[in-house]
Image 1 (cartoon, rainbow, N blue to C red):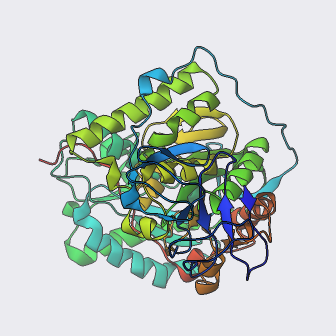
Image 2: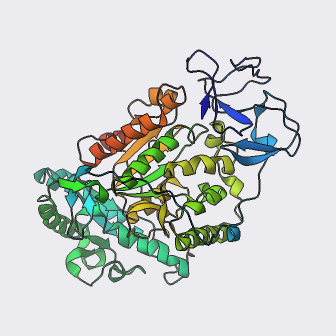
Length: 511
């Protein structure tokens, strides 16, 4: 990455790769027509912050290159110094999946780093929690009103007596009834709920509130028909009877959870999910590369790391298959891309629907540019496995966890895969948070950190102005993750209790 000048008052642009023929404007508020850069480039248009300027004159059909990759083709003649708008760029054809499987892979071996630890909650199944929470799972949306009422009473009347328990969380969702429970794709939401209820932050305590007539029966969620962990509302005597039964069961579990204590654990027990939302053109040059650097440190320390979001990987998947640990991982990655291609085709969805209007306002032209900036969150580590939506991770190292790009669906699926710490990059800004695991927010721009000083945890914007390096911010994030996982520091989202709803991914039919 090259930066024209470090001084804040000087016109600045960022060119990522030596072969790029476009760059993005760094200056807050953008730059006006006739602005001259120190290198001699003169703007012939007004260019907002984060938007692209042509570094050369481009003919119709000529490739537009960013990150050293073609993000599109010029629809008309573009003069040197002109602003590149969405309407100026035609979308290229996505990589052909069948051509991506190689007979052998050559992944980069990274030197392990030893001795890193965090203070976590050890569980009997070998997992480790970063929080100590009572999680109450619903088997159907019908019970949510009653459960939410009960949870408020539990928090007010019971939780203060159990100071070692951080929170009580209802795992509410809209699944369970009116669904094609035996359809092929129904396996996705069912295994997601099954894995959510066994999350490491719940300390092995399982509690399910159901109605009694739903299609997703409690026996499908539990490994046994042990009713000691189940409340069925249709078996209770009125509303007060429902509340009394829920609260009695909750208190029994709170007593056991209250005995949990943090102990010194190897960093190899940390499971970190990476995600971006409200992305902009800076995401791929500041926050995401810094997260990628931190992700490599985590992997080298033996931890497990997820990156996700199929539509924000699909157009850059040709850069990921060479990083697969073996041919089997390559095939699994391609299989998930193929499945999602078919899923979008069934819904007659066009991949140009991504990016969002806010992404475009932040300078992202199309899904190809967004994907190229998104995948750098994964760093340089080998991809050791690929997880289907909601599937539990069984290996250490870097994983591709296949999820939709939706923030809420992606976060829910990563939790189901075992994530106990979340890192979320944003350029436009979002107050997104999760009750089940800490969410660390990383801003792509200085202006966002200044605007949302009490919502952003780590600022990567200093990279754009040359006041910090990718390694500086990545290292800062790495140590901040350890402190948050240990309970020594609290994210802003947890401080304000900003927690979004869980959102299951259900591609199966509704009946």
